[in-house]
Length: 261
Image 1: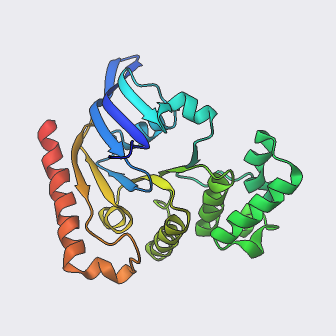
Image 2 (image 1 turned 180 degrees about the vertical axis):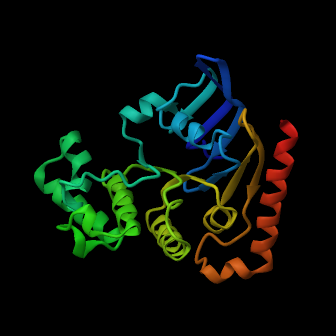
């Protein structure tokens, strides 16, 4: 018997009403994401990748279609705290320490002081920032700030992690390192991850499934299942023939997606 998908999207449309008339951001999107999957969304700028992620997070409301998260509506999943969300910018409060930033959602959710302390220490360890809890954001590099942002999203131990191009502003060396660290974290926690990126190598390296989107109105042009191992993926795997073949398929899928224009 096939397990029910963690995220299930069927015939989803989203139309924004603007001063210049209606704008269709997403059209007839169908997608199923299983428990423990790492799914990357890739496509040209403006194709609706972030909009789709925001629909999953109940930050946008689809015009039509069906979307469930953990078997309930996206809004119910938001209220049940079924996911953590990592934005493009770290969004840390400069007047709070790193530990204080991570603790903030736990304070809002009503965890006891002891529970807060325990969870903060655990996630700081997960992202290898144990020694930086008392530092302030401006004392950390951009990459370390993003790791703190991931820790904050993990603090209340949601089953799903939604990530909107979290490493896009970082240089290639830092980005490679954080890609490695994110894969290690994913393997340790077994969380379901939905990840937006503009980078083909990043999408191929990280994912069990790559969702290629067409230009607006955003459609799913192709879903590519990765044959790469779910276990250890050293950066050197990016030089393998298998990796290059998948990257070629993604690139061809992006080109084919323009046929929808």
